[in-house]
Length: 212
Image 1 (cartoon, rainbow, N blue to C red):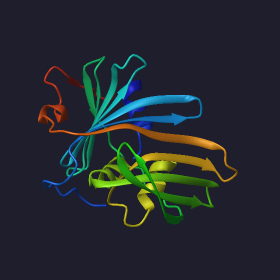
Image 2: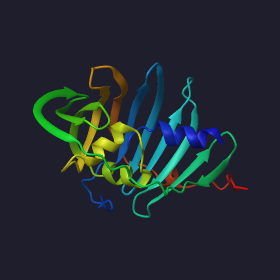
Image 3: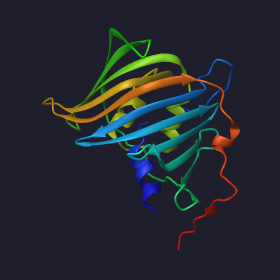
């Protein structure tokens, strides 16, 4: 079930439950995640306390899907090719590292939104990360990171930044302290729109994958 693994590793990134309200972001976010010479395309579909994560192939086809429910604290992976799904348990202990955070106050406009620069340094890992974050009621993001419990450093460091609720990074770059770029996240589009609940349901034609 390679796509189950790929979607978990590639997503893009990524504090309690999500509070659903009329102002919380609902819609679609498209982004690219690059690690070294390899790039992958992803889409977040966000509605209340649920996030559908799609990994796209080179031709734009959906290769893997994850449905994240931050209220229930569950992750379900779907393989469109095999028409199967599987619950994704995550018993990994969240990584605990010490970071230095600098919310610089520098700003720039991305996708029509004013973004602020946040810089993180982790001496233990020999890494630095720079994020350009937009604040537009992106209340889903921190709960999603907690539910998925991702281990990539862009996600781990972001989740440790104080008072990061409600913002979303439109750009994120991880570097070694010598300046060598390791990974990069770039958002191509953010679209607010009403989404169907069907996006977050497992199709009736999909069968559960049973582990041996």
